[in-house]
Figure 1: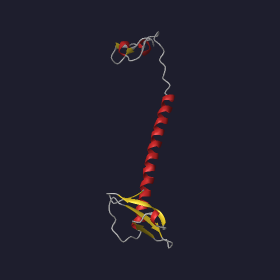
Figure 2 (figure 1 turned 90 degrees about the horizontal axis):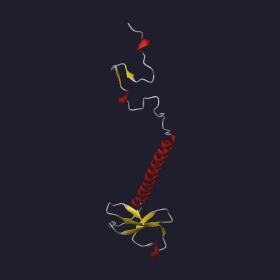
Figure 3 (figure 1 turned 120 degrees about the vertical axis):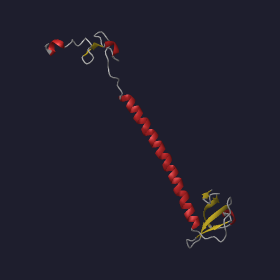
Figure 4 (figure 1 turned 180 degrees about the vertical axis):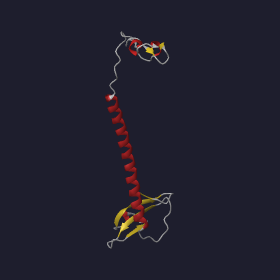
Length: 136
């Protein structure tokens, strides 16, 4: 029986003991002593650029969603204010109405424009087809 040390090939010889073949040509990398040096690519710069891009994208999307949320909440508050106001008529879709506040703190909706009266105006609103009030 041969000694394991005697079976060991030099490092420069590419031999696969499992297949019992020389398979240097099958390797995806250079195997000869004179082959160019294999160096690992520095990926830190690429990672940092990618991290910055992802962070920027996430931050931009967050700001868009926050702006949309703030707009929705403002719309909700306006609608809550108008629906809690007093008015003695049925608003017509597509028309503009004006919201006023009395000295007592009570709010009311009117068809009379702010330039035609001296009421404390809170704003003018448009009733859209979804029955949602939009400030104009």
